[in-house]
Length: 67
Image 1 (cartoon, rainbow, N blue to C red):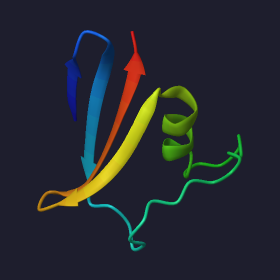
Image 2 (image 1 turned 90 degrees about the vertical axis):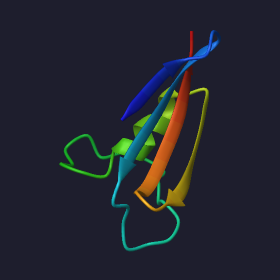
Image 3 (image 1 turned 45 degrees about the vertical axis):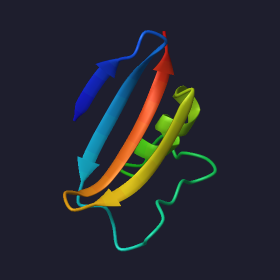
């Protein structure tokens, strides 16, 4: 994980191996009792901007939270 403050937002990069699907899937609603599958849903709900890319390290999901 990489965190940086660019003066207007905190920018966070999270790197993992990704998943079997090429495009990250975000559920329309998160099940509060589920033990997985809420990460990208939380990113979408709480961030001011977010996105993803594939690179040699794996999948990088980035997001920004306005300061």
